[in-house]
Length: 126
Image (cartoon, rainbow, N blue to C red; front, side):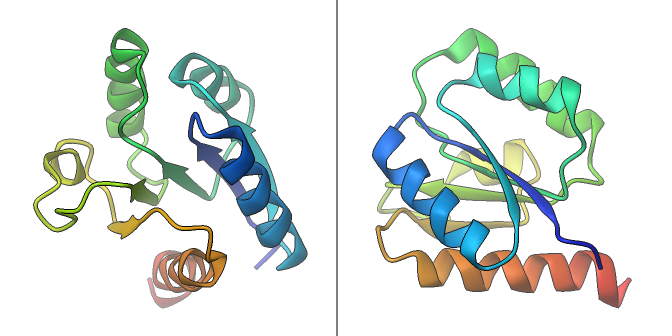
């Protein structure tokens, strides 16, 4: 498989820059968006192999547009990266058909492992 292209959507600029650096060091191409509006622009311009999204972003109108776009493009695996304490009951996990949900952390190893596993399942096993 070629180096996968990822999109990280989160309003925490410092955290997404950390994720971007670590995931690029692991061999991924990474784009970042700190709003749903920017994320929609990215998705309209490029094809992504996986999207990592924080669901608590503030721009709800654009979130609804992004949600519709993601539902239309179900061939893109999706990880929800959230600060919520109730991960498995995260209603957004179901509403946008996410592949998994993880706790937001500055320890990127959990995210890296989840990205690797989902991309393997999505592109190699099937």
